[in-house]
Amino acid sequence: MMWRPHAAQAVTPSRWTQVMVGAAGGITGGIAGFPAGPLVAWCGWRGMGRVGLWNITQPYILVMQMAALPLLHMLAPARAQMAGFEPSLLLVTGPALFGTLCGLQLHGLLSDRHFARLVNVMLFAAGVGILL
Image 1 (cartoon, rainbow, N blue to C red):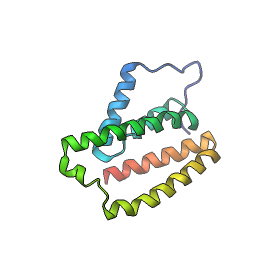
Image 2: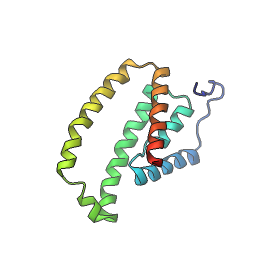
Image 3: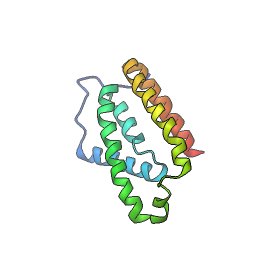
Image 4: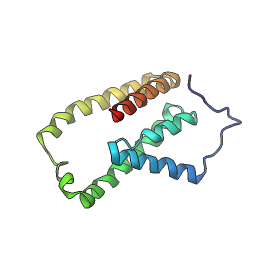
């Protein structure tokens, strides 16, 4: 069972904490293309439900992706060219969109408790995948 602070224990996080979570997301985004991992873990630790988590992570991921594209082009132009329309990119786009639609449907069906369990399992699997 995931630890959640009581309402009396809920504390507004300091700016320093928010900056550190964002920096950790930048590091994991740069290393593994997984910028939301630290943010999702931190929000879960703070006891946020699925709607609160979604409202924070979706804009965060969008901003991180918009920032990453020009940075990739400036810092690694040869690698940025690989992000063009290659056959492999076209092969993953359809399944990614299908997965997004499935995720949106599941988001509406899951309770906060089941959502937290699913997120924790997925974060664990992602962490193991990064280590391998």
